[in-house]
Length: 367
Image 1: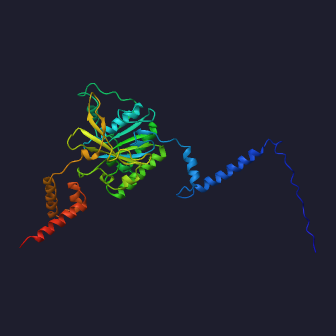
Image 2 (image 1 turned 60 degrees about the vertical axis):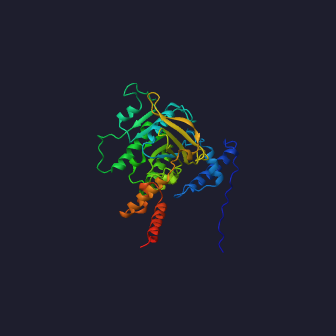
Image 3 (image 1 turned 180 degrees about the horizontal axis):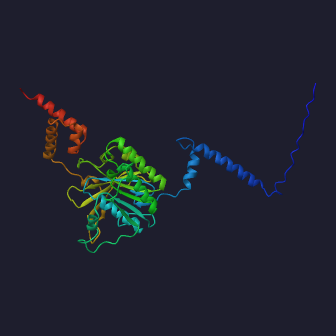
């Protein structure tokens, strides 16, 4: 039987103090390794997986979002402002941007942020139309702060052969953000970034793109959008935003402009969606304004608070009968219930009921 030699290794007792290493240093390194290991596990795959406590600890290190435009729009939000044509979306958006660029709220509204740069992507007005709104007869022009940066499409720009117009537009938009360092964007309007936003297959990529921009550059984005023809006798809801519900589902906040039926100069602002606050300006407490140009700046002027019902159209019996008649005539032309509802400004269900009642009445008539 062969005996194997064994070698004994004596581990010396290191004096860590002589080496300048303390117990706290060792613990710190151990915690660092554990932390890095946890971070590694958290970032695997598509999801970020953390305990609720860890999420809160992470969130505590981020600044609390401040108001950019009262409770309607906060920092780091993708907010959608929607309204029908000619109700003043662009007027209000420029006024909000001007307020942020100066670091001064305008009467009736709150703002908590400091003066800063804003990028206003204007896909609606020409420079001459813009000038007209902020001058007196193209004289005595309003002086904007240099923090207000207006952007419009360059008609002479050449689109690279390997890019579509849409891709080049997105690339140029991102380049403007990087070159200016602006953290606040106003986009007038969403339709220009992506056609056919009423379809989910187009709306979803658009909202994903805007949200990725927001996260990548820590932006606050206000995007303007249209409403289709709507029933002016009913309160504004999230269903009135033109297009796919993806738009309202994926934004952080949203508000709308409504029109007073009896006074064409009056408008009201109503919150539709909010995440950083409760809904304050609802149907029982809309914010009433009037559009005015006291000198060389077209603007919304705060008037009061009130109930949305006071501003809605009151239908007479004659009006109701006329709408039903129009719907039935369109149906005879082979137009779908959904399209008829869109043209008249009522739901598809209402059109269906009108047609059913008309058919029943026709059946009951004596032959």
